[in-house]
Image (tube, rainbow, N blue to C red; front, side, top):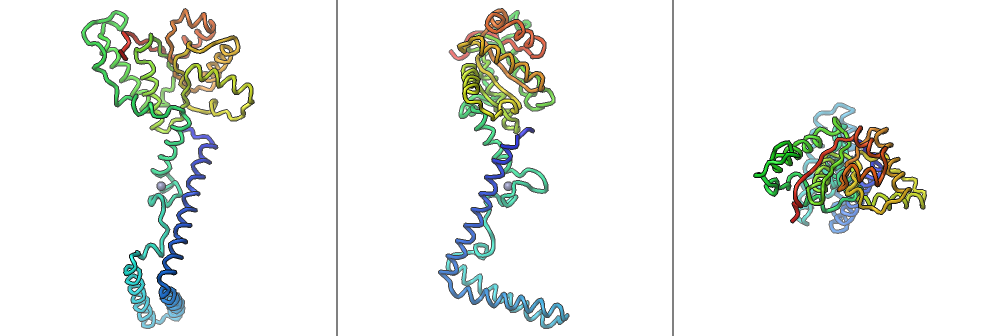
Length: 318
Ligand SMILES: [Zn+2]
C-alpha cells in the first residue's frame, strides 16, 4: 500500500546506513584481530598463495597436485581456526560481515519481497508519521471491553438491541473493514455524545490499519485547523496530508472555527472524495449542528459519501 517516495527513501537510507555500519564493524574487527594475532597475517598469506596454485593446477588438470593443495589449505584453515578460538574469536569474525538483519543482509528484500525488517521500519515510520504515539497501545480492538456496555436494556435507537449487542456489531464490522481495507475504503462519520466510544473506535481502526502498512494521519479537530493556518503561513510544500491513505479527525466541532477554517474543511472533505481517499471523523454534533457550524454542502457530502455510524449510551468512561 501507499508508501510515498519520501517514505521509501527514508527506509532505504536507514538500510544503507545499516550496511555501511556492518561493513565498518567488520573492518574494525579484522584490524583488531590482526593486531592481537600477528601470526594470522602469515597464515592468510599462505592460504592466498596456495589458492593461486590451486587455480594453476586446475588449469593443467593435475588432480593429484590439486588434492595435495586442498589438503594443505584445509590444514591452514584448521590452524587459523584454532588460533582465533584460542583468542576468543570465531572464524566468522574474520570472514563475514555481521548484518543487522541476517535474513536480507540489510538489503530490505528477500526474493523480491519486502523483508520483515523492511516491514518493521515501514510500521515504525507510519506510526511516527501518524502522530498517534502510545495511545494505540492502550486503545485498540484487542483491548476492547465489550462487557462495559449494558446488556440488559433494549434500546429503540439500536434496533431493539442492547447497547452491548449493538456495539459488538459495530466492532465486528470495523474489524472486518480494517482487515479488508482498501477493498472497502469508504469514509466513516461517527456521531454521538462524549464517552460513547467514538475516539476509541478511531484509535482502534488507526492501529489495525497501521499494522497492515496503511498510512494514517491523526488530527484532533483543533490540530487540523491549526495545521491549515500553519500551512497558509509557511506555504509548506510537503503535502503528506494529500497522499496519506487515511486521515482521522477526532472531535469535529470542538475547534475554534471561522469562515476560513470551515471553507478549508469543505475543500479537504471534497478533495478526499474526489481522490477516493478515506477520512474517518468523529463528532459530538448532530446534523443540525453540523449544518449550522459548517454548511449545507458539508452535511450533504456526509450524507452522500460517508457511512454514518451513530453511537449511543451513557459516558462509558465513567
Ligand atoms: Zn531484512
